[in-house]
Length: 310
Image 1 (cartoon, rainbow, N blue to C red):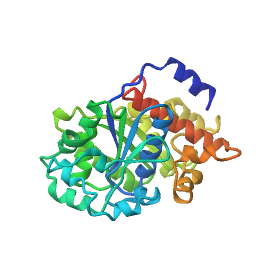
Image 2 (image 1 turned 180 degrees about the vertical axis):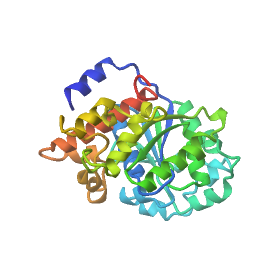
Image 3 (image 1 turned 90 degrees about the vertical axis):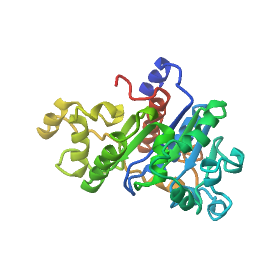
């Protein structure tokens, strides 16, 4: 971890626990599942009791972590407890090898989707997440809410009231972000007390010197009065730097969560979170350390319910 990260940790306030957080955007392929998994794991590494919920009907994380049998099990049906209010929490919660607990996705999420409605946005919170937080079972519940606009996605937003939005470069992803803001943030009922914790430029791969998708995303967010306040420090570029970059007076920075093959391979090939994979390596690259630092900054943002000096 960098010296700056250590100094930040020494100065930070006590963590605000008892939170549920949805990591989501209304578009697939934005890296939300991988980010949600690794955020949950890093929170656990920082000493918190964490529950990670895979509410994506595709079950990619569930399958990758080795819970194929649970995914195919028709009795693993959150509909029972969320809609019909019977059953015990521990029927749906599984321990993992990484000191955090897990609610896997299952084929029965389609049943939950069909029984939820536009008026049931608070049911997942009322009957599942909030009781677990109220009794002190967990400090944080992290949810992967799926990538399309659905009743489950809406219920995840409502159950959390807090969200982190990953957004990769590209016009379709920017459109997905606008759709998320219009359908979720602007429409969220007041009783949910909804809040964006962070907007995370994700899967960045290009330099910022050229007018391409990566730059348009980073510059657009940084220059936005509405959205710049949600950017983590690792995604911020001061306004005066853009002219200096174009004039060749400074090396282009590398803001945002960069596309990282190790981050992806840790799950796809080794079936484990990124940080746990790095622990097993004899050496760690500078790029991987930086990615881990960025994930740890997101941990601090969750702990403080938002970007510092928002």
